Length: 215
Image (cartoon, rainbow, N blue to C red; front, side, top):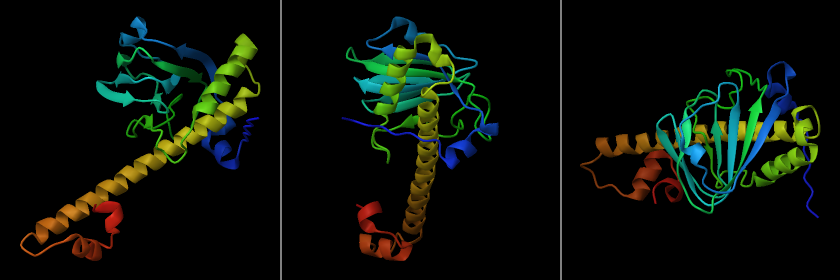
């Protein structure tokens, strides 16, 4: 039997302004291509988090395109104009609409800064978010409209939001670190292009592991 345990850690409590807990406003299943989702639209007071279970989809957000495959998760902040530009016929996804979200340092109902990538890949350190989404959907079905008020979903939702917020933040830091390494290598090559250079020399002078960065 599978068992999932969720707890509101001190970190989760510190994440939310004045300890205000978010609310799950709606849950939507996408089981195939929906024509209305291809129309550009935005949500003024809702955050949407989309998790891909099966198939592939391309979302357009503020004129940028993001391709998602099974296991990927997409965050769409309020006021962001978005639509599905392409999708496979096998598409299956869960959409969580969230409001009453107050994260320290962010606008109301924003989960991540606009400077951070909105995609959490299945290859992220926390590889499987799907149980959270399935439990949110199942609890919503059980409670029907009562899932709008406080119930066991609150702990589940705050846990999911905390994980996604941290994953996006850490992914952004990793991306910045990778860019810094690339720039260091470029500068070294520019400065020593007349010399006899190999991977060992670059790794030694830049204090890098050649198996991580240079192969």
